Amino acid sequence: MSKVIDFNARDFRFDETCQSIDGDEVNAGTRAYVTMSFGNAEVWEIGDWGWTWSQIRRDIKLEKNTDYPFRFAMEGGVCDTDDAVTIAHIAPKRDWEDRYSYILDHNKFEPVICKRDGDGLLRIFELPFNTGEDEEWIIYLVAQHAVARYFAPVDISLIEAMPDISYEEWWNERSSQIVPAWNEGHNSADFGLSDILRRKNDFAKLVALINSVTGLKAGDIFGNAGAPNGNGGSDNNVFSSSNTEYTEKQFADYLKNIDDGAVASFNNITVNSSGITEKIPIGYSIDRAVINVCNATLTVNAFLMIIKKLGDGCIADFQNVTVISDGYDVVYKVGSQVDGTFIRLDSVTFPQAVLDMVYHKLGDNSNISTENCTIE
Image 1: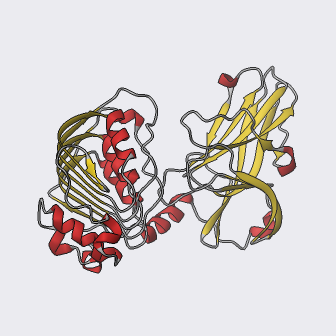
Image 2: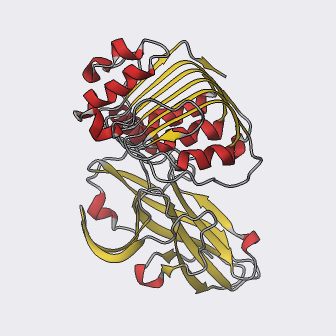
């Protein structure tokens, strides 16, 4: 006979066994009363818009050989870059490998109720499992790169007036608002970019352009650093690397040194896979910078390292670049959306998934231009 386990915020706590494996923070969030559209509720709100792996748990004793549904409601757990993680694990205490896992992001496990709640979604889940010969169980709720609110199931009478909507319908509406039609040269006139960015190998004009985009003088951004020194090093905040072969680790170490307002030029470089199985730190993202990559062969991770490095108000210009799929199973995350940033891809060859990730990087007043590109 099935017995229902309803979510109660006070039964859960942060999972103290949750440990970082790559230097990112763990366990962001709080338990609190909040005012929802249907009234007040005590919730666990976990996760953030960075990469903090956040996990709450409930230890519970159950009857053997019994069917239980774990029932809860949630809001959020979604981000505009479409790479959030929200997941539930229900595991016997004796053996993690015998767990039940339910992926809650997107519509990978269908909720029993899905309602439009303002601009967001209210979803109620029932996760079925059987205890078998185990009495001691742990329920885990997880969020990363999104803020997720978990709370007790809501009385249907309080939400029946909300319109029903599927996740796919909601996401299609949402993505049409946050991702414009990426036609070639889309809104490039808004930045005054179209003429300059269509000139190939004109790095000096890109340097001048970033000043006009940000409204700052050259010395404010570049410290009157002059031109790249051409020998693989940097003068002040200007970096140049030519005719160089890197491993991904070496390339990441180089990117660490690039700061806000920098000018970085890479010409005729190759980045090879390091054969690593985890992310390589590249330092903080940078604002108001110019990065030019020309005549290069990059791994997927190396290309996405550059994209992740971009912050607000940057220009990234890729010309005659081939992105190869070495190390594709360790794909780099591109980080949060950026505003006022322009990316030009001219004669670039890459997998479709990589292009999709670049699109999701762009926030308000950002733009991408693609010319003569090849999707593999």
